[in-house]
Image (cartoon, rainbow, N blue to C red; front, side, top):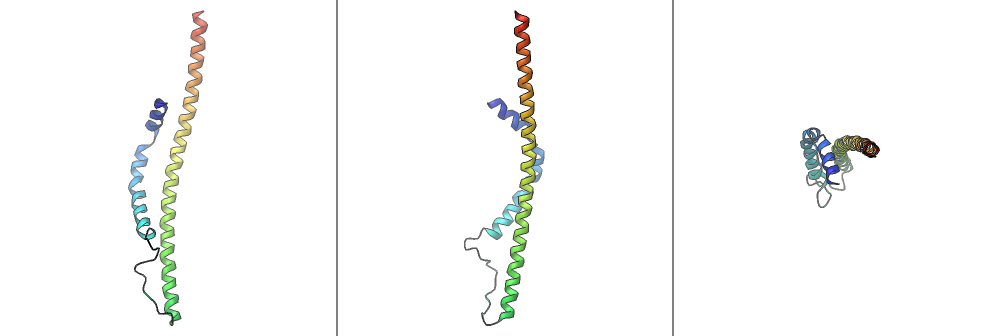
Length: 118
């Protein structure tokens, strides 16, 4: 079991993972800073009197724009993570196929060895 894990870990494209890690970490920090507030409200949002509908509309438009920016940041992070996941899954599938082929080869060699030993 340890050999298969070592094989999988050895086959991971660590250069790609390390190259993309700062982008993913920065995006996650930005997302956490904007979305991860305890009360869920924007601290910089100005208090708008309820009597002025134009000011309320402008504040709501500003809030929608901020939410749109957060959504875009989330989408970029999710895309980067999905691409890394896809790459890792492809490598794991390749390792699975190689392991299966190696197992078949070992069984054939064992059968040949038993046949020759008789």
